[in-house]
Length: 477
Image 1 (cartoon, rainbow, N blue to C red):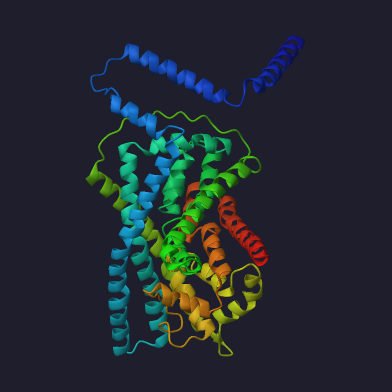
Image 2 (image 1 turned 180 degrees about the vertical axis):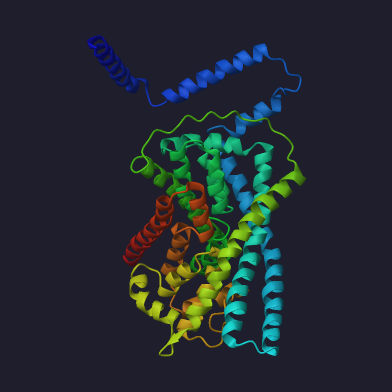
């Protein structure tokens, strides 16, 4: 018996001694061991296995890798390519978005209203289902479908070509320092198209702790549903601060600045989580850079449109339809001849104005939670209603948008908006809670109600705090 105890004590002493020596070996022990094992295995496999199908890396592939993964050029090339993808997405989506909106909102909506009137459907039913549910669905499809149909194929083409693993390689050090996984760079990039898709993409991370960090911080990637809001508000309030010939440059710089702030917040929040509630070491990340290969166009289009675009769009529609009905109801249910929406706006205005927003913005982000795409139409509808603007809009509870940036700016300024309101809306749009589609996806991926609630509430608190701080600094000057 004593022999067993002595043996057990020696083992414990040996483990404690080994643990004390462990920290003298540096933080990259796991990486070094993994790289050593991988190198030895690769060397053995190369010497012992002959495979005629194996393709030797050509000189141009080696040279290209030295450029796209170099410390000097790796990041500029990455930002340049991502900027091109974003630019093509934004510019390319404008025209088809306009065509879809013209068809669904300018043509089909009046036809439905006329049909409803001709058969005598009561106003309440007509407004709830046609002005509320149908218009919400139409806005989501017209604003969300074209950008996703462009962004996802472009992103998949880069992935198919073999460039995205090089992005993960470049970003690995940054995310490792933040206590996260290098593959989080891929999920973050996917989040720029759609946060729900970015959350699903976190499946590529094996460690549950690091996968959870990637899921929670994906919200800070500016999804395509928020790009229109950023561009519109920057054009009105940031572009308006400089001479007309510099307005486009100033607006674009402001939007890029907000996107980079999102990346910065993603790293900072990852660092904070990995050292508090999700404490732990970053796991080893062994990435074998795949060979470059010609993109498979047809397969890419099918995969991007069917597996990603239609899937995410359908989820957004499912959540947007009831939200449109709620938007119509709060604008049309009156108590003492004042709508529920106006009660909320008046009640929250003092607090909202103190932090540089207003009650309209808070209400819009609450009832438009299913889809960021309907935030601006909701804000315009609520602004016209609460400010009593009689010559704009399509009626109480009917979301609308204007083709003219100047006319949109005039309505917002008539509703009391200032430069501070515009800046804080851009910041709140970046940081606030995920849309309901993403929240549902987080729950499905984590299976945890606790982390789903945390992923939802934490960005709201952070967004309100940032707006408060910016408002105080802004008022000093």
